[in-house]
Image (tube, rainbow, N blue to C red):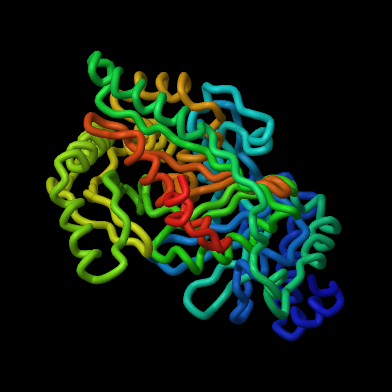
Length: 469
């Protein structure tokens, strides 16, 4: 990490920190001693061509977070807390809606939800909460080649903390290069699969028996792979490497306290809201990419023509249509699945667009959609019960909604293709949709392919491991 003096000199050359400090000081001074109604003010200054992840990696303030959208090219790194909405419920309640009414343009709460808030959280997930949404104190937002440094203030209460806030701003640093980028990521020294291959086979067979008995149509069973390292893993460095390796995905990192970070590269949107307009997508059915153009084309046609994958996909599409239909005055659903092509995989996808009814909130949408059959199963209640009974670990925020909420919009990805960093351990989570026709070996291989986004950045070859298994 750069020394504070040197980093400060860089900031002085860009004038970003100094300019923001002047704006913050002016606003706080103007609100000192006032008892006006509470409001949230966002102050922004240009910050040149700074990279958000490189900036984030140099900050000592916690919590830290990162978000980048799948298509819009915007990336946001954030530190500190201006305001927070958290709780034990299944989704943010009216308190978040009240906070949104106070927001100035551009301000957003970033956060997410547990997959299953009714299941008690393991200690390693304790800092994340059942749901937690943070209005960051400071953000570095980049669109295209230009970055903006921002500070969010909650007035008039922050006016009584002017000295503390200006000290926090002074403590922000700007790196000259990428912290920790002098060498590759460390190599894992151990791997533990939960469940192991025998346990996985038992879980899949249990699900198939439930289908035979008519209790379920689909359940998504997950595995957890613990990779151990001989040193602490830097979550921001991992995020930077993962982001380069996984174009076309949502990228997210949530670090509520030092030493605990949830991060991932998800291809799947839960929903996006712009005003009253909403879009979602059904994603289910998976194949890898081919080693050649011919292989790739064959795998594509195999996926599009697979009766098993099309049936699994149809369950997800119909469920999302039913859930959103109750909340929308207009809804259009693609009735034919197309291909979502990624760097190392492909999925079936159907897109859904609608207009929300007046009075429907983002919390209502989250409660209705999560969990979709793409990560839970169908029917929802029976599938969640099966997951609780079979999986030997707490999913935490894996497969839960993760994203942001603002006054005029919101966007959430499904927190899949993800992992939890705690010190020298990385726990990877991934699932497979089990339906009639699934086999333990086939679904094991699908999960290995999904976690390869992570394992490959550490120099591990999943195909070699499969050959040894």
